[in-house]
Length: 143
Image 1 (tube, one colour):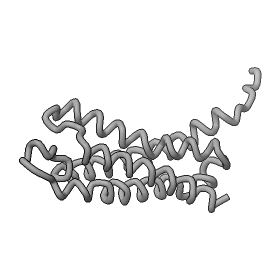
Image 2 (image 1 turned 60 degrees about the vertical axis):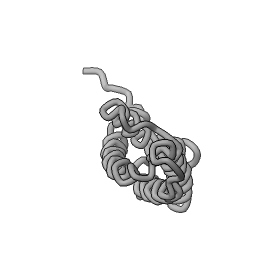
Image 3 (image 1 turned 180 degrees about the horizontal axis):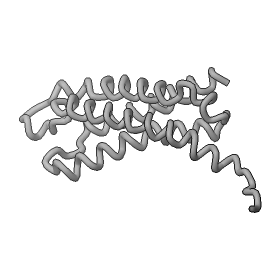
């Protein structure tokens, strides 16, 4: 029986891929909670007849959720994946932002009445930026 050549990329996807997918599913569940929490902040000012003051708090809620998501994904990432540097950072940033985008897209398909307006955009944008910063910062501090 011929021996199979060992490929480090295959081992990476088998071992770290499972860990990353599990963490991404928790980030997706967390963002689903944020999605429902921020619904009062996503009301279009034209629907309320004036300014929606709660919209000002949407970026703060999104930023806190994004920071927690990025930090959670980057915890033990260097140890688990045996990667470091920009390759790991790209994987972590995509792993933190993709669940947010997927939840937003799926919820828009399920509940088309709730549109993406300024409050929703600011929550997602702040979440993505802070997830990027927290993931890269935490992963680089572990190297």
